[in-house]
Image 1 (cartoon, rainbow, N blue to C red):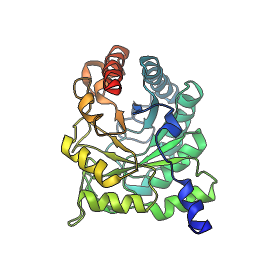
Image 2 (image 1 turned 60 degrees about the vertical axis):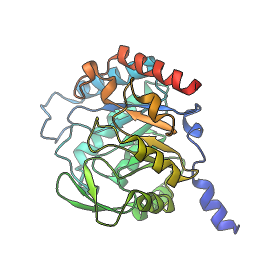
Image 3 (image 1 turned 45 degrees about the vertical axis):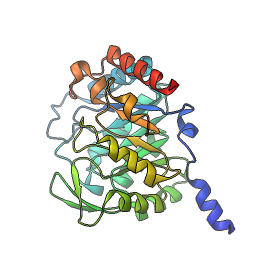
Image 4 (image 1 turned 30 degrees about the horizontal axis):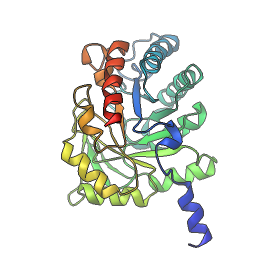
Length: 284
């Protein structure tokens, strides 16, 4: 292999253990309450936002998850792409930094919908290990009505420019809350996304809290080859064993909340129940 190609390929993560040091890691979601500027923000101030985020993060850590992801879950209706306003981006960076300083788990960043450069910038500022990118390649229509396209060209150049190639890219394929342009099936989307150096792929259901069909996860893993595949929505303590037969990891939020309701805080007893199911599945 020519030297330049070998160096480029070596940037790509080989497996999830490079970040999480465990087989089939579980990433727990730290869903931020509305940030300054969002319609749901009620002027409660940054201290309140940080306090709630840290409470969720610590319950996830004590409950046994392997990683965290800080997300602007409640900033909807969402901006698309790089239109995320500076006040929301800055607030998320501040909160993410506090989560990372006060926990001992590898942490990622997600900015909805598909704020690629924004997401990476927050990761650099906060010290995060990875980012979730909603649309690295291809084209989709979001639930907000906007048409969107992959952000790989600008994102990878920015990552290089910032000396941040240690921050790995977890990229969605057939992302929830959106539909693809005609002709972009799951296999095509995976092939395109891998081509643009995704370190891992994420498969989700139609909406937050909805599980993908098991067959979809199985096919995604077949199409992905050596690239790790995570399930990004809808797993529960009852069904996680089925998804871990095929998936290399899980990103979970809703099932770990009080009563299994997404807007509620994290319930440590539900986290422990979920992780008991995971540990049983890992042994099989």
